[in-house]
Image 1 (cartoon, chains in turn orange, red, blue, green):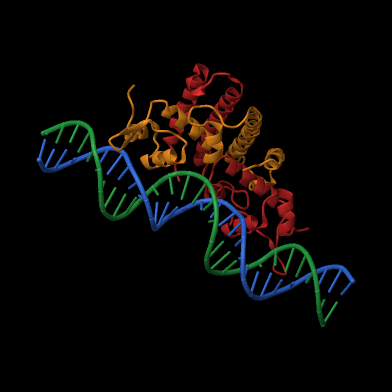
Image 2 (cartoon, rainbow over the protein chains, first blue to last red; image 1 turned 90 degrees about the vertical axis):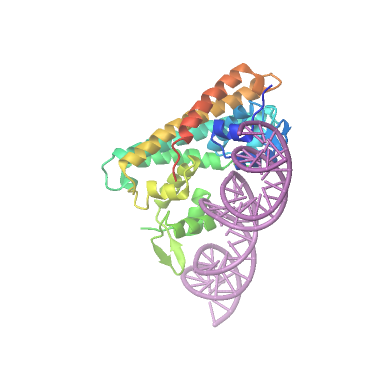
Length: 140
Length: 140
DNA sequence: GTACGAACTTAAGTCAACTTGAGGTCAAGC
DNA sequence: GCTTGACCTCAAGTTGACTTAAGTTCGTAC
């Protein structure tokens, strides 16, 4: 099976080689050996990196991501914990939707100050509730 | 009008006083004066902090957030830029949804390795496309 | 067989976003 | 008038996620 140089992976994913080395050191991805002193990666590392980037987008730390999808695709953590994250993500999606709507509002509403605009306040208050309920169950 | 001590704001929002002081120094929020040497805040600071937290959830930096919603609720940046962010957020929401579905899958699929599971791969590939298209228009 | 380029290692540096620590101030209650 | 507790300032420290720099090692092409 054909393996990939770090530069190739970098070009395929847009992630800097230094970052890939860093991820390798941290155990987020795995090289399958060396060609001389060059790390060789399998093609599925691209998939893994996609997952890593999705996790980052979601605001997870690298160590959390590592636990969620470890190298061979088997998660270290249990169903319960993952489902909790799933639920959390649902809330986050709602929040982002609220933010998007708020921004859309800001771009269009002619009110002089949005903090005084009623419909804006309503939106934000809804978001606030969600936020507080999310914050209350934050973990490392 | 009644104003709030930093400790009160902290309790209302769950944000540490040191962070509130930091935000104040950075100009993300504004205190309306002092009582002795204590900062006094108006009630609407809670709304502002909600917006700040929403922005953080969305992965914006504090300086970006500051530009989006500055102290009086009037954004410094123009419609165009905000609408670009709105669009970006839409993509991010899609990505998060993909991540959520992937995680849901991981929790339920009995396959030994998810990286080999077809339906998982399909999901992630879709996410990959979105990711790349988002990455290509990143700015400070 | 030599030159080149792409990758390597290790340590140090950077940046954002906070937090901590030391020492100081003030208002309210007793 | 004294104590107490909540706040203050300012500088330095911390953490996570990388990046940069300096010097080194290979494989491939010529």
